[in-house]
Figure (cartoon, rainbow, N blue to C red):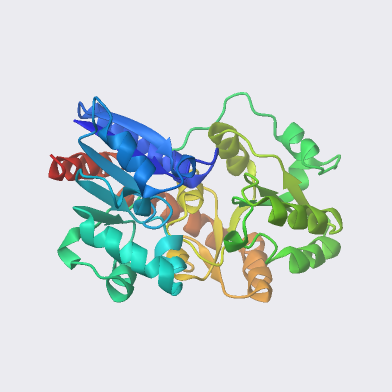
Length: 343
């Protein structure tokens, strides 16, 4: 079987990593899977033309109902879709997008949600058959770069300190776009840094929104204790995550944050904003800490460094949670089974 797989493939993003992983499952089952960036295409007609060229594609797959799924509306082959997160959390609020996503979901043979919450939201806002939507959490694998220098990483990010090992580095991993809200904690974190210069916040991720990136760079440049690191390969990022004090997620909206799950797998504590996508994964005081305001973030951060027992508990439970609920083996079996539906 020859499959076309459409996704938003900005380098070093969760979508890209997820798409590459799912493609590997499909190809391991003996199929051919051509992964293409949805941004390459301007209209469904372009994709329909590609699919019908000789040798033609037998089916298709897309991550994100609107950004990629809409491009499959004119194809004459069966297809499946995977919810991205912002499609269900944000795009459903826009009537025109909602109409398009309804059409995609009605035509799709199957849909995949990362969490039960996403499935319930889709059923609430979109025209869909419940039996068509499968819940499959993301499978998580981490690999730390062997040749990684923590001191060099911090120095290249603008963090200068003679006593690197004494720093309390909070790492916020996200693509620079508004929905990830990387500036949400900047003001209170600067105050934390003023109280104790050991506290530093490093924001790292691809520059996905050029105009917003300029805004972030300007704010960070004028804020003490907050730094912006250049994006790194996944293995280097995992190495940086492994060395930091805690991983921070301040997104306004999430589907399922791979970074949170990777942090748990790497045995690093997680501080996450209390939004549906995050609270579906992070159980407060069990496998991570949730905050609903910048001030609450400060309180939870202080607990994390003053209460060693709490820190060890969330790290231990986070690791166990990923092992039990985010198995790559189960994820592979699910997608290989779903692709058979397109046959």
